[in-house]
Image (cartoon, rainbow, N blue to C red; front, top):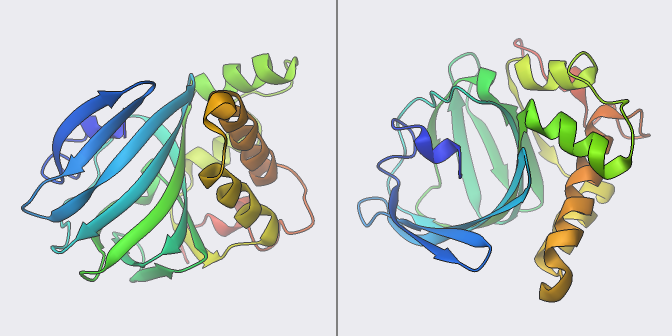
Length: 215
């Protein structure tokens, strides 16, 4: 949200007020669309976590036009969200589902069905996330020519029931003790990204191969 809020088409009307609370920003939903908040934490350069607890009554029918190269992974704890992309048919996510898309996916509308939605999103941006991962892990192994490039540039969106390993990550993000929250958030973001690009056992169900234009 901290960068995507600059997308004047998709988020400009959705967001009403914005306030700062300690190390986070809280975005209030405009009464035109409903009520609720999105709380954004900047975890490290190139990564943020957004906690959404919203009740959006009107569809958002604007194209995302964000210059940033980003990938967004959202876990739905409760609710329903219908998404329409320029190159795909309608996609629906609900309780315990996960969605993965990027700026190249051309999201053009979003409808919550007039029901409460509770979810957590991890949003990461190139090129900053590459440097952050190298610093955090004490390596120079990560670069844009790796699988990361495919994640950030391929079209399409993937929605499916979350694998247990991924579900565990997002559940813990709701339960982090406040005094260690900033540190643990970084660990969870790194863990999620390593799952995305690594050859983990569930890669066939949740991986780069699922980002393709003919979904």
